[in-house]
Length: 240
Image (cartoon, rainbow, N blue to C red; front, side, top):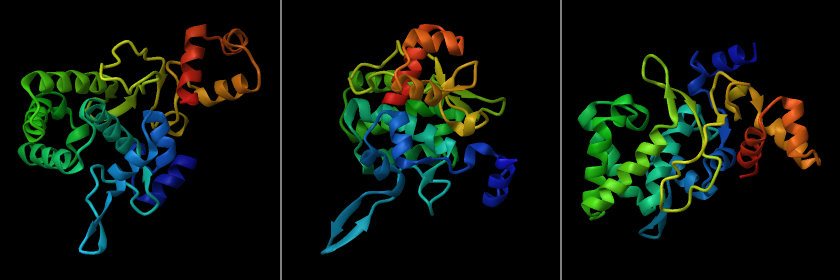
């Protein structure tokens, strides 16, 4: 019932497009600085002739008024975060590369389009690599990192994102975090898009709150009927 009211208010019946995450909360789930994410979704201020202007965003919010991210926006930022890991985000050059892919594939949102995961990925990496003068080795490394991030997105039969397995461990080092388990999942159809333990629907916040209150990992595993490893990943996710 709550979903139907929200959907009616925003004129959509697709939960993926509903405003769900304040920037600070989304940044925590994506394990990245809040100000970096904010610059991606609202643009960055820069001085021009004594005045301040704002650059175009990299991710166009489905709720630009309140500046909340939808699930689709969250997935777009998740993919962009892979670029930040290797080179740092040069906003104009990333934007230009995305505009190029958008034009070539005639898609509005290339970062979440299924074609981006195949031909679009090569096209983006090549164009972006040329813009930043990255070597062939550097471009290949970027492609590998992007692929790791893309593989954590689960799609429906139409090829649209329906689940995201966020990283629960370090994502700041240069190497792609291939070993991160898929224990925590986010889906707009479950718990209003908040992280839950995959296959259970148990909110990681419920586990973390009890952990902060003093319950041990073993106690939580017993009470929630989970493996201790799943409890530990839930705690890592919420404590980020």
